[in-house]
Image (cartoon, rainbow, N blue to C red):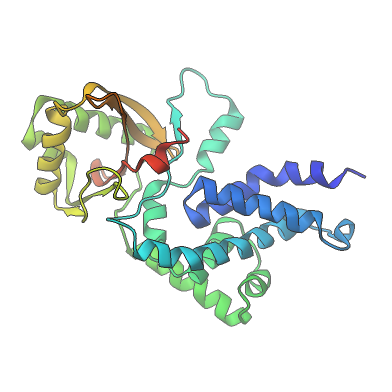
Length: 297
């Protein structure tokens, strides 16, 4: 029989995906998965576990629930808006390996993670486990310590909140890249009408500096306000920064930008921008500037 460590390692990537979707933090996700390993390694009768992936998934969900409950207190004291830790990849060149395409398709976009922040911990766990990983409701009820009916209601309420809230994001990657490229070109030209035209009238810009760097403490709402913000930042290429460069990248599988440079004292500057796009217009611009959340790039 395969040893427990080998069996667990075969599930680690899946469990990390589950935990990241619940927590929005790779560091916290990896910690939860490691704790799941310790639970599995110390489980009595582990050789009798028939559905190892199911057992580990619900165990990871239970651990994430505890993290989410404690995180609510921390995030209430967070400086400015909270955005998830992004997963940044280079753009594909030429033919992409089928496994890589599948992995990218399996990623969850920043826009959806932002909406999911509005859910209660119990709603988020129920939604992720059922709607994204098809875990049966009886197992979810056990994970949450609620009745079967309550588990169904939690997932249903989460589903409605996700559907009705936040910037819409329905465009495929090719359309996203086209829209973002036009938006960036307008910003570099200082073309305010062009920026406004690329934005949905109800577009929003959200920045996360975490109190470590300068960032808007509140979402910026409306196409004109967002356009002026972008024109002021990206259009003039902040003169306080040296060698500022923008590279198109994938952010959680969607079109985005990696912006890097240096302050005059040599400290590195880094920003990751991601977008929500619907019907040829940008509905959401999410700027991650918190260096703690970009340290793993």
